Length: 316
Image (tube, rainbow, N blue to C red; front, side, top):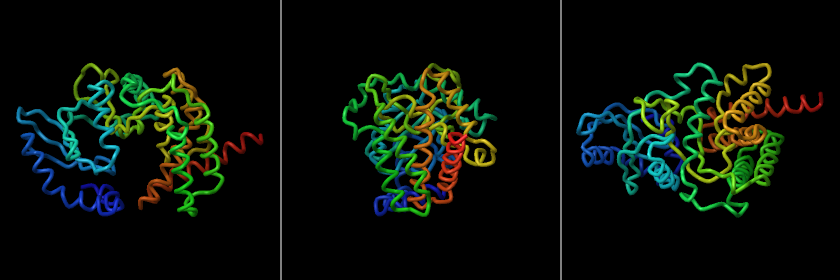
């Protein structure tokens, strides 16, 4: 198991530790019930056990066993409803045991595509497919407090108060300002079922040409909820912190990425920028709160640099 998965699970308290203890029995049981031969363990992010398997008819597949979190039910519903359009195809699933059997996929776009603009082009093209999920899958969000921007504002406020050493007040204030602007701009008529975590590591190469994977890639690990499409595009921009911190003008680079995504999807570049900044700050604080400060710090440092660059531009 990847150490990051164990760290995250242990920070969930008794439920996380119980899940860890159950895995040595649960995984063989699932392999027996679904007639699978287990292969190598994969790095499945921070919240699940993932391994390669072979089905009874000799086909490669992937078995995922997720932590018992509320998001799991939403993830399964989203993937099943997508039927492979923009998303990984589900071969079988067991909600009670948190297990999903999926088609085998290749490396992520982050691992195989050389430049950020190329990765963003793949993300945008695949999202356009994924956004075709029926909106009826989830109830419309009429109340302001239900909107993703309101939830992120609460998260940033709470985590920043608990970890004041991790981030400046100015960064928090800018993130909350952007959250308020996104909340005021909410529009039920424009909302789609967003992936919710559409970054390059969640975009994997399809191993065969098929309907729904026209970009050559599909998404895994959706969070699935209604929001304006710019939210997904903002999530796509929150990565590449090491590259951005090494640049002389990271702000101009990201602004260019926003323009690229907006033009290719018919969305708003400023909204993408605001969601991206808010996601960068909330992700950094979330990782810090869950004992992964080393991973969270670059997100927050980049947010600080971008804030300073915006201030210089306005003064100039």
